[in-house]
Amino acid sequence: MREKAWILVLTLALGCTSNPAPELPPRSPFPAKDVCAALLAGAPRPPEPPAALPVGRPVRLVAFGDFGDGAWSQKRVAHAIYVQDRQRPFDFGLTLGDNFYPKGLDDPADPRWKREWEMLYTRLHVRFYATLGNHDYYAESTPDAEVRRSAMSESWCLPRRYYTFTAGPVQFFAIDTNPIVKGEPTVPEQLAWLDGALAASSAPWKVVYGHHPVYSTGLDGNTPEIVEKVLPLLKRHGVDVYLAGHEHDLEYLRPEGSLHFFVAGAGGHLVRPLGKDPEKRRRWAAGETPGFLTLETAPGGESLRLGFFDRGRRRLCQVELVKGGPERVDCPAGS
Image (cartoon, rainbow, N blue to C red):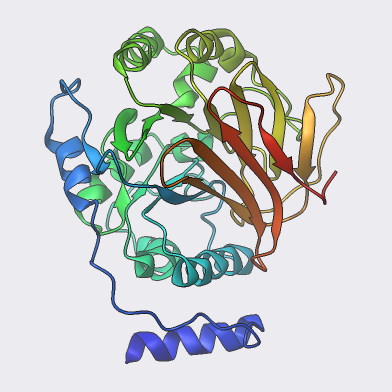
């Protein structure tokens, strides 16, 4: 009862009473919790990645990055995600880094966890599989604290700094781009893991996600270290999608072969205008627009559909990827 009252107050405050979240039957709580437990407890390189959903099951998820400051914009985007979940439930979520500003949280019991994570996202009753952003590294102890929080939360899951799991016809590979960008000594180990995990995957669809983009037409532009170190692995192993944050905008970039690039770093923190596009990579983008990305597979797994939405839940752009065929792009607005 108390939760419903809180939701009503937030809905009125956000001016969304014209289209409130519908009441749905209670959902099974946190169906992917065992996956996080397996990732936390398992060997660094388990023989088989844990499965969040059975192979034949369609997948629907939400992804966003660059969000954790507790400001009004983050709450608006979180509420839009919640309302969309009530209309068509998500199976789980992904975070694309910069989970807490300005320098992450160096204590897994910090009160900000409740205000800026649990109250906003745990009510979806799904797991969010997180990655680290550059702001999550500004305090030395923050990455490990965000990992330790996974054992204390029903929704947050950052079991290690890079990892993989499957869901339906998709295998997801979470990477830690920060050491790669900084050229740290741990980079060869992570790249060897990614190379091996991608090579071992038999999933119909492969999605790699991390904080820094390969390409971007935002204010920061391309990430040379990711282009040099990660992109060759993505191409070699037939990765279908690379998801990133870092740029505080929404972008769909020109694909290279069957590899498609998306940026969804507009989760709430100080959205920014777009930058220049000297290489003509931009197929669609929206600057200064808080929002999020959804990804879902067709019932038979033959296609993968990605959509960008703003904080009013308006669909801005949709891209449907079809195995062995051209992508279908429906992006009527944007730059």
